[in-house]
Image (tube, rainbow, N blue to C red; front, side):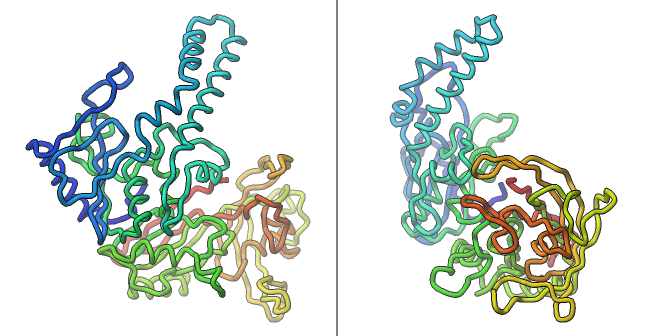
Length: 451
């Protein structure tokens, strides 16, 4: 993961803790039961989150504990204890070990496969027992359980140890107490490994933290510097506030809240430099200051920013009968459609050759694939790459669904196609290229869709 906050202030505190451990004024206690699976002498991540109200300190995992001179810090316990973990694992622990022994000596392929399947079922059950213990607090101060996050991932279980890293614990505690976060840093302390060096700082991990942190922070931050941030906006979240109290939660409001007290804070009422439809996921840029916002406005206006989107079309492209559908096996092409707002049916757009604004879109077929509906019915669909050359409202959805385009809507399009309960719009802003406002270097960000 990219570090969600500046690490500068927090790194100084991490260094201070390490020096105190080395001079003995803070003791690093190994409280784990010795075993072959958990040998002594392993390292630990030391995490610090500097807030306006306090400096928070914690360690990764449950093996180590700090004691001694912790003045100046609010020291956080692990989210779940070693005793809670052992209790959750106890039910299936013996059976799993017995199955492992049977698998090791079994010579019959079918029986061995059956034993492995049973072990996997028991292991998943144990993991679910453990994950059910984790509760976090999100950016708004509301509780969110790991089970709820697992549901948002379509039921795909995270890795063992998810929830035990420093960052989720630190942010959760800060948000629970309505602290204003400023700086986060995690430093490794211990014996060097292939992936960790003593005294080096590391961002929240991809393996576990990426699974849960976006739901705690409210945003998935792909990149951040002193001028702007790039996020992966989730589907169903507005880019900017809408009309009405129920439409104030959006990418902009979450961004402003998260960076309200940081060294590099958001100075703007409207930091988003472009927009994505609420139902569209993917790359969104937000500026920290007026100069950067103005720079991006000009770059977008003068066409120097290029974007790419991935979409799943609701059917087989070659069988579509739109005026822009491939007629002779073409794998790419151009769609040009004039459309305008349907004033009697907002926010729908309608085709209007005379008064509509021209939307120009390059398309490339990527592949055909099988898609499973929320009701578990499968069908053949088409994955395409869209490259809009203009920036019209609903341009890509129109290019897909209108007769002048493919006459084949994007899956889950509630405006121009069909959306079934539990289904999202399968449209994702996957790539953006622009000139960095300070370095003047061309930079490209990629964001793979989750479909």
